[in-house]
Amino acid sequence: MIYQDTIVALATPSGAGAIAVIRISGPDAIVIGASVFQSVSGKDLSRQKTHTVHLGHILDGQKVLDQVLVTIFKGTNSYTGENTIEISCHGSSFIQQQIIQLLLRKGGRMAQAGEFTLRAFLNGKLDLSQAEAVADLISSDNEASHQIAMQQMRGGFSNEIAKLREELLNFASLIELELDFAEEDVEFADRTQFNELVTRIEFVLKRLIDSFAVGNVIKNGIPVAIVGEPNVGKSTLLNALLNEERAIVSEIAGTTRDTIEDELVIGGIGFRFIDTAGIRETTDVVESIGIKKTFEKMEQAQVVLFLVDGYQLSVDSSRFSVNTLKTEIEKIKNKYPLKALVIVINKSDLLSEDELSFFAHELTEHHSQSTTDNRQLISISAKEKTGIDALKNTLLSFVNTGALRNNETIVTNSRHYDSLIKALEAIQKVQWGLQSDLSADLMSLDIKDALFEFGTITGQVTNDELLGNIFANFCIGK
Image (cartoon, rainbow, N blue to C red):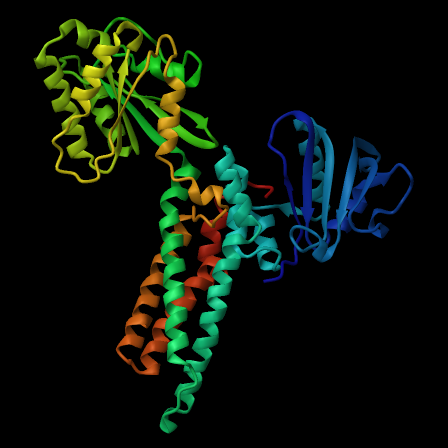
């Protein structure tokens, strides 16, 4: 598709600021820009070289709208692969709108969401997975998500998929050639080499699919539910983690009646903490709704912090109190066997070493049937902010950052994940066909399915509906 029109949009966030950038892209971008720009040196903008910056004024007839800098990008040397002009003006909302309206009157039209990046894809400047990484890069809010987005935008994921697709395509061509000479019963594709390739492709696909578990939480943040009985210090812990008074703290039980959420970056990984209503029997209708939400948030969380009031436990000092807590912990672990559970003994500053050791032993001794029990225990004082760093390190330990540290390809996009799953299914069918000495014509169908799924990731196979869904999530101006 080749666009014949020229699009205009604000490329910087809307609202007042020091400067704003207005982007124009399309066949008439430079002509439209030249028609409203007057250089301080008297130069004709349309005659200037690509990648040059010019100082001048934007004129609406005889009226000066602003003093600006105009940057020229010609043809394939631009982000979109088209003639592009970027106008850096002062950040007044009024000035921005005046210039945009002028450009629209001169023949431009407002860009749709993601249309600049869509044109970059259609003009071969980016493949589809790189284009999607642009949106991830814009929305990245921590070091890890930024690192992954940069790696994908630079083509790490694309190159890995493209290489697999090319090798598979070579063998697919030989299989097709065999079909042309079916009556002569010849083999052009070495079955041993083909089996080695299919095995290698299966290994790479499984690694990429497994990486999605890490990539998804890095991209979206790891939800952590802080749960426990009323007045054990859940809101105080949230405030200590965030280092601000985010939640109301009171000695009155049941103060938190709704969930409170906030985000914190630990070691470059985003965590989304959820302070929940205390779990107890209550006749208060509002508090009951809050407790119901607690269980809903626990369901959604990847990590559960079960907070225990260590001081109250030492005051009660009864086997009943300890056993009651052990029962509650066991219920959570049995209901959510795959969730990481951290038992946090709060108010440790009021406990002796012997008491801490006793409670640690009692609360971590378990009878769960799960062989993958990953509960841990840590002691803190939320009020005094002791043990908070150790708790943060414990949370960070639940994230497998090995692939990230080694700069391996990590899948974060659910569309890519779905295509990889389907490609793996097709490859495993090919592998079964080789082992079963299946005929070339039947194997070629499964090979084509795998090639199709590889193509949907990079954009070699696409349609208008797919592109519409992808680029609709972009911001206007990008």
